[in-house]
Image 1 (cartoon, rainbow, N blue to C red):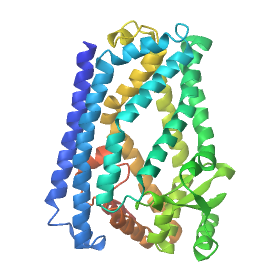
Image 2 (spheres, rainbow, N blue to C red; image 1 turned 90 degrees about the horizontal axis):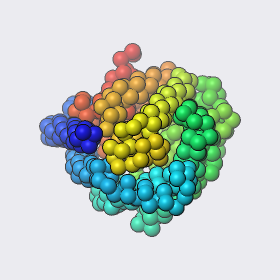
Image 3 (cartoon, rainbow, N blue to C red; image 1 turned 180 degrees about the horizontal axis):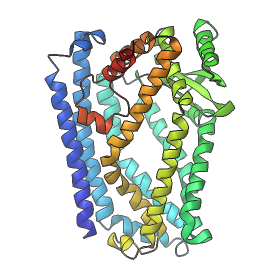
Image 4 (cartoon, helix red, strand yellow; image 1 turned 135 degrees about the vertical axis):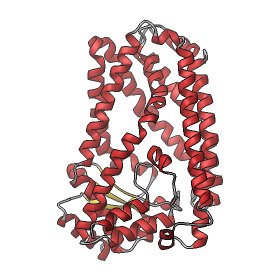
Length: 413
């Protein structure tokens, strides 16, 4: 019975996702030869046509990827392959040992990630290259994947081991201590990421002295946002896409700008982008998101503990009852089948935060011009889809569309 239910959930999520993508392609195609009037302020005709082609190419490829992922997921949870692997790995240690369980979870994660590599490579070297975004070489791409795998093993194995060890150390309430542990690790990583991990992939250099740095530092002082430094990241060696973010907290806080962003935007527009990021901080979005993430973590680990302790869950998939490692893996694999349908709620909250950060940037700069200009240029340079279907947007967009953001920015004027 459980296998039938899981199969229905997998097919339902796949059907829903493919249907939303088809709706979006239809909406984009409908506007291909008749763009909305507002598009003229963002892109010229050839660029708009290129953006349409980019959106359609990514959508069609995404559909193929989703079908493949659904097949892999079904094979992983509904066949005896992974239970056989679990029995084999469990034989390397004492019954129920935490390190053997952690090794099983990590091996499964590595195997599943390896299966996606051909799709990642196709997207990078065919689609992104076709539209002028790819700037990475096969060697750099392979090195990035190897580094990512190494970091995943170095960081993931100890955390999973600790979670499973807590089962034996503290008993039924292991999930409470486990959630506290993972939350602590996440907070530590927020501090360590820009100092130890990000430099493994990208070169970070201080923003040079000059007008731009003076304007951005003055903006930080004006808005009560003190950062340890403003750094420029060499994102252009991998992609033509641009971005900005800040990381860390307290005296470890850093502002990071992609070099592509610095090259594409004017000083006023860069001020607006920075003011937007500061807006997230000043509006309290970061602690709110951390609190929501932590609540979700507690709920997930509580579900793992309850399901692992049940007499029916693990055996339904071919694993022994009471084993925490298989339950942890299964919840990780199957959780997306449920959370997908909650995406509009999470995205709705994220969009509200984006509107608030935009409004903060507008007020900090005394008008919407800088933010509107930045949004238009970023949409043009990134070939943003200007006409997404509303339902597709609700499920997949954590940010409002450029037109929605511009309307909100200018509505109060």
